[in-house]
Image (tube, rainbow, N blue to C red; front, side, top):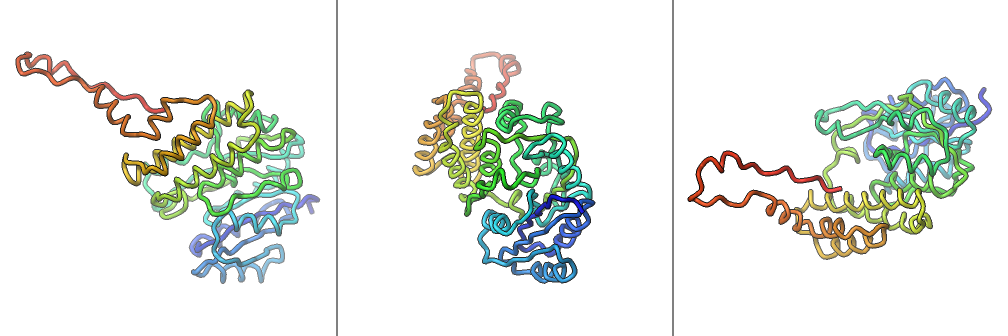
Length: 347
């Protein structure tokens, strides 16, 4: 038996259709020393019955039921129970490859690092190709097969626009990062958890490998694809507020600059998400929040603050960029030669 135990933490909520496949993938690992912790987060379908059936047949499956409190609380509950030296999070509608743990533990030991990041396959289940393209799971060649300080990995990922925050796409050493927990009651919690994992301890080292070890299912009405509402916006705000509390956010360093860049991107997502729900008329509370949080980032970008807090300005700017109305006295040829310019994407 392999000496170091791995705890696979699986939050479960109303996934009776997918749960058996998920559990089977965890059980069939070619790495033997594994405990599987399934947290039933108040499921109302047959999920708990399926968990109990698997638990009766397999001694290394631990099942705990809690009132429905969301993904963060379920994962934190799993972390409290976990006795493994290493942690892997597995969503209950996904599954992992047979060699996931053996591959990750091999790299962790070979490179003497604390976290190993890997890539994933995405498969669509009742979702159109257009929506599926939004879910990037491959790390660029610039990051693959590298071992480096965690903060350096974060900076590189931000600089090449390939920062992937999913907590399911890595295995990490528990005792080195045991203080990191998920923020309860918010959406997009992985943005905060993974960023803290990489930044809060300057001695942490990571390895990034090319292997596609995780299989992510993109399906209707999952957290990733559900219709956006105000709680999505509030999630971005909470994450930005928490990251701004880090001392690194105030530092004039390469890591500090990358962190501020990431926080600004979260705030821009908050603005565009709200507008996708309600249109350009942001309420006073949202405008005020955007202005306050943007003003705490460095460098302060007045133009970005204005455009995201007052999206009406973007509409006006685009109108001003259109060709002026041609007078009737001008020849028709002028109309044929005039064409509106493509407006630039907001950065």
